[in-house]
Figure 1 (cartoon, one colour):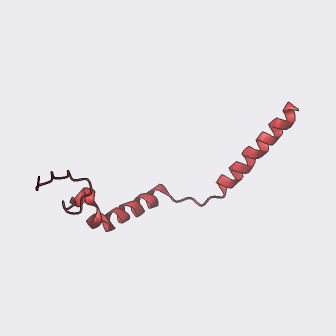
Figure 2 (tube, rainbow, N blue to C red):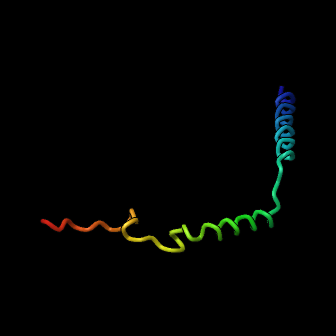
Figure 3 (cartoon, rainbow, N blue to C red):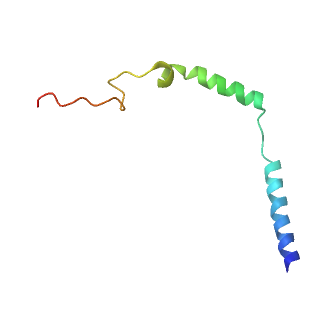
Amino acid sequence: MPGTANIIAMKKIVQQLRLEAGINRVKVSQAAADLQQFCLQNAQQDPLLNGMSSSNNPFRPHRACSFL
């Protein structure tokens, strides 16, 4: 039976390779251009580039209670 298991494994590999061969691919240069365009379009809303106002920052240090 080891021969049968080997044939089944090879059929699975061939099926996977056929599936991967049918996938539409995008050229790296096109993907990089799309990524660059996306970054430039969304740069104004990026808090890592522009910073965040202290009133909207959920990670700012909390102040001590002032009425104690």
